[in-house]
Length: 96
Length: 150
Image 1: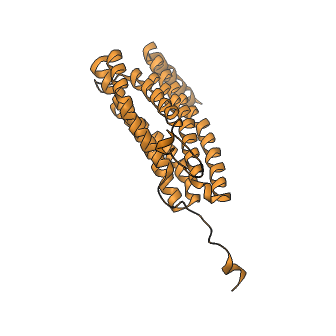
Image 2: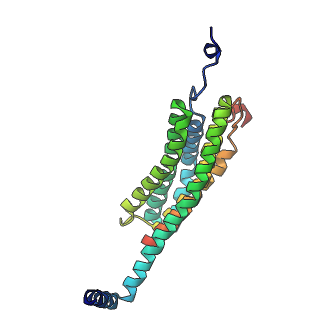
Image 3: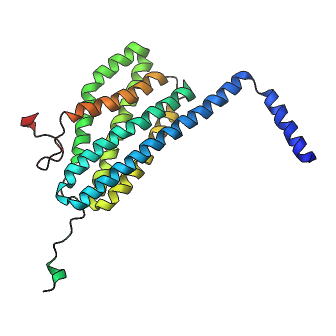
């Protein structure tokens, strides 16, 4: 019990030492990490679905594989733009 | 001759040049046309540092397109099943490379983060929309439209 109390008092002392600027920088870093991570989830699901359908189309109609590949490439690039927007939010929060 | 021997050989890979790579190379060519505009905007926003930052961002975008198409094209030439791994693995790999490329230079004197970030998004989407005009994606021309139809 005394170990928990001493750990709690250490946390309180550390929190008291953090300046507002440091606290702001910490929360900005955490927000940047969340922005990047969350922004990569949606495009990841989208690209997975898109490529899955494209591979199925290539397997069903191999003669259309070239056409499917071009469409798939453009679809991936458009979907990836969403991840890039999240990444730009990350670099703006982290470095700007 | 058995029924199994009469079956046609399954087509499990793409023969010939990759249409996605031809589209990506065309986008790289268009990024060279876009370069003077990007340089002008970078100079207006941030001077020499702005120019360096936006050119760096444009280089990242073009390398990203090329790498995406090259990975997909190579995978399709080996086996269609590999395309899934190449596309999703490539997505993670390219995001990681962009992260490394930006964080490696973020502390440098010549970097202006805001113009760099805006250039990343605008040139990525701009080049894609511009390229849509020249993509055929038909059975006869799976990649770009033939020159006489442009």
